Image (cartoon, rainbow, N blue to C red; front, side):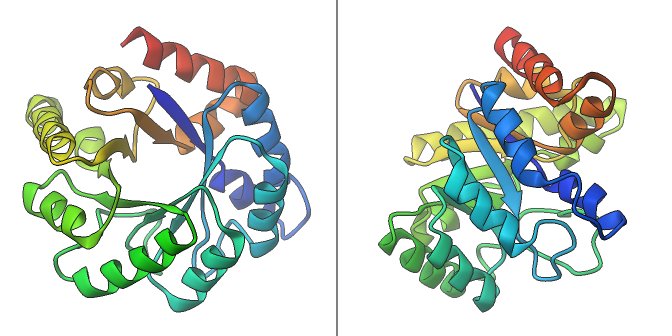
Amino acid sequence: MKLGVNIDHVATIRNARMTNEPEPIYAALLAQEAMADGITTHLRTDRRHIQDRDLYQIKEIIKIKLNLEMSLNREIVDIALDVVPDQATLVPENRQELTTEGGIDVIKEFDRIKDVAEELKAKDIFVSLFVDPDIKQIDASKKSGAQAVELHTGNYANAKKGDISMELERLKKAAEYAKSIGLEVYAGHGLTYENVKPVAAIKEITELNIGHTIIAKSVFVGLKEAIRLMKQLINEA
């Protein structure tokens, strides 16, 4: 099981004071030293955290996988085609949301997603879609030309005690189906040190992308230790 560390909230802290620290590139380098398998970052259209300069620096300096979360916005697509991350994960984006609220609607946005996926793949960028654990959305993802899906784990993470098993079963079935039709399967959103193990135990899922809980833990134990603790939990699952 691989771990992609999302460093967006390092930039959130920096931007709270509109200053130059902490710099996301240093977080990316520490994550690399801590044996993270990849860096995940989301260049939003409103630039609320990661800035263009951050993205270019990370791409230039780190040696591990760079996964760029991105909307279908034309400006962002053009930047992705210029930066050429190892992977692009297409996500929905609402300016009013605190964080991504759900999976991208592949059925509704099928033509745009297909076109963008073709552009990205033409530059040898691996294409993943962030989707809800829904069979129809997964089918549409495959047809769009995506090479992977990242299952949205938010409903599982936010579920009340009586609903956790149901949401976990949805993730399992979705992962099994996605794998069966030839997609790579990842997962992420809302995963914490307390709830990550059951998701990490789903054998079809090969990578988790986790950010907020790692950055929060790092305030108290340091980023490298926070990553080590998360990798330990994942490996124990």
